[in-house]
Length: 89
Image 1 (cartoon, rainbow, N blue to C red):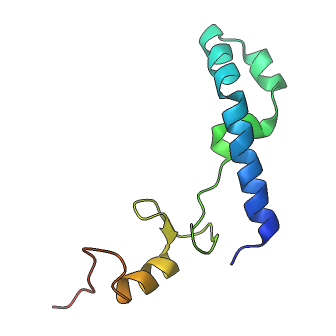
Image 2 (tube, helix red, strand yellow; image 1 turned 90 degrees about the vertical axis):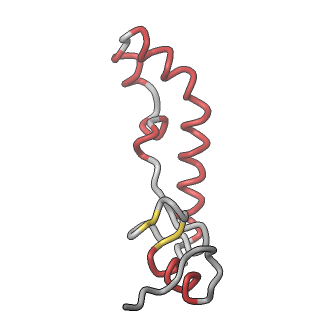
């Protein structure tokens, strides 16, 4: 499980992105790059991190399912993900 501080930091970044989304879009439409540079760094959506919904792990994230590879494997082997079965040939 990821530290609570990392999860809180990512939530704070996401809130900042939402807060400045309209301002960023307006400045980008005008081409005012100096104004964009004056916004907080965390207002950029690129700084967001994909994290596992269950464990908070950021590496090996599977976008389709919203979990890390380790959590995905556990859920799949327990039959908790519909339509996913272990391969056998």
